[in-house]
Length: 185
Length: 185
DNA sequence: TGCACCATGTAAATAGTTACATGATTGC
DNA sequence: GCAATCATGTAACTATTTACATGGTGCA
Image 1 (tube, chains in turn blue, cyan, red, purple):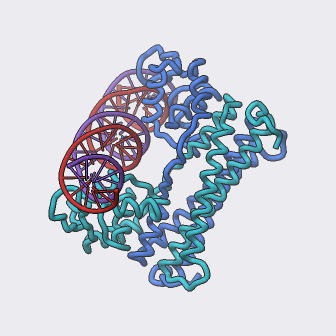
Image 2: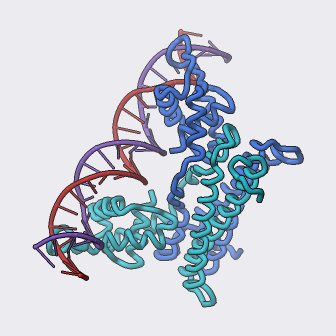
Image 3: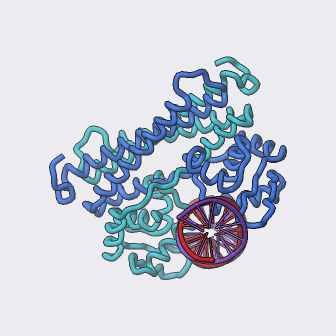
């Protein structure tokens, strides 16, 4: 399972509280391993119980930040996990199931949904490219930065591919689905 | 949720029993929405209870095939779902988390794991290309077949990208991780 | 002082995985 | 007739999502 290890990695980069981690997840590591704040709080508590993290509890109980920090055992566990063997994750791509269904029971209104996804993927792509420019363009990179840049580039390529897929699918749908696409392309 | 709809789609293409669906999932639609036989049996029972499927129960109780068929309500539900709006699936790519961790606590032995993934993705890519040749090359395609071909091509591109990613990551690791990669490239 | 918001959580429901069980058929 | 296998399931567990709750802070 990746969430605890994603949290260990994030906390090693910079210690912080649950809510800080939640908002950092929304920006960086969460692009590749999403988690809600509920999951994060629960998992932080587990990791602390397991002796991989420690926290400075806030003075006044609830409603105040609790700062977490990785213990040596946590760093060791992260290193162990990083190199451990796992199977390929079983793929689950809902859009592909929909296209498949469209091929059988269509035409449906899948058209509009694809337009919407196209825009979402374009936005994500633009965001990643902006981050790439900001953080990795025209400079010498350390080993760690080269690896991070690689992960980001993989995200850019995935989004590029998703954009292309939506466009191609829309083209196929437009060929004979004029009910939905009233204006010619 | 996609599983019930993936099952409806599969059963509309061809009615069948739970085990037939499970083995078909291992070949076709399961490349994009994986499910175990336990999930499939549970979901088929639910769909029947909901009036979207019917089944011819075997004469002799357990251990015999139970043939499922989609009812009109099931087809309608599939069409409704196909065009319905959903958010982008939150991404979860464990390998990216590992690379990120390697960037922080590395070098670990991630090298070998990447080699293994590289081979798995190469095998999957070869399989998809073989299916493409067999089912879609050099022939006129119907609308449904063009959509299916598109899904397959998307799979081919994803695997191509995964292969490239593994190679690039291995190259970065090899630059300064000579402990693991004893021979120069 | 009261209202919006923030940080931390709890609870319940759903989805997916893993381990195991049972009856039927098939081939030796 | 017995072992291997197939088809169908049950049970328990883990992961994830969704909805809600509670205490604290800051500011109008």
